[in-house]
Image (cartoon, rainbow over all chains, first blue to last red; front, side):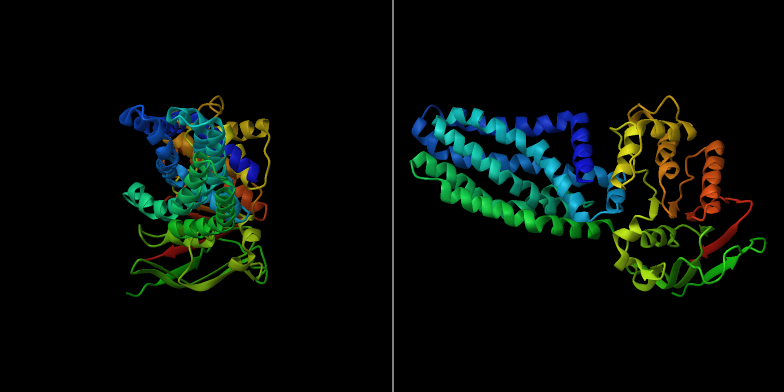
Length: 219
Length: 227
């Protein structure tokens, strides 16, 4: 079942590739604007790199979260998903996983490339990749709760940012912290472990919260 | 605001099932939307092989009743039981017995009719082969258009693609909400024969419609919601 939901959402995303590409381009452009605006001051660029890349990733995920349930809601397939004979949190987990693959994984993969503009060392780029790999599932998981709560509301896009962005702060602090530690030459493992713990906690709780929010939104 | 509920058996209908094998029982059901009470004290018991036609003016709560019956909506009061057990406690076990088709077609525009049908069935735990899906869509009059993205189809054709689910599902209880809108005469008679077969095979169909679906034989109930 889970496999079918993931496959369905991946296929839908593939048929609407433009949506996926716009998220990636947004991320690349926002990250690239900073080196262009600041100029070739490598020391300053290295210092701001962790925060800039992570904030850009948070904002880019805002772009795609609105679509997580809204399309299915409009054409009635979300009702049908709620009526499938399986626990709703599994459906939600499948959709969130597909969202991560479609909207977050491209950012994780491209981040080391755009990170080069900030004169980061190879090791720091690796940590940047790793921190995003561990941290972006948190963005999808917590974001799905916000997406479910704002479903069918007018101006849901802005509301979702107001709801979800504050909840992203721990992921931002530990994610950017890990990269920063690597820039400073200290070990990033403590930050990464905390980020991993945060990812596990959100994996445990957010599918249930999203499932409950969906039931309320569809009443 | 008081509402009356008329529940009348058609004079010509023949009772096939015995009184004690009611599989779906609704007692004292009430529904409140916003600050309006749509209905209250609704009782209904249905035995296998029954067609229930749900009628009533716009806003009388037909859709709400069907959504309550498929667990999408929580009733304000009352109890619904399936085989003697409360549907809330049955959970997925009950949902697996139900096919609900609502106002919205439940068709993804980006997918073809075959993909739509196969995926929606796979999610319900019924795997349908490509050939079987194409055959069902052919029966619904979509032969030759199975592989087009659904957004290329007309409104009525999309409705037909959604209705093709009825051909491949093996659920006991059908809840159909205004499924005849934007269908032509041929499709309406097709839906009628689908329901007829389902009811003849011991299934239950509860259909909200403004058109009169004259089923020739069998156990027909008429439930009229009033405002």
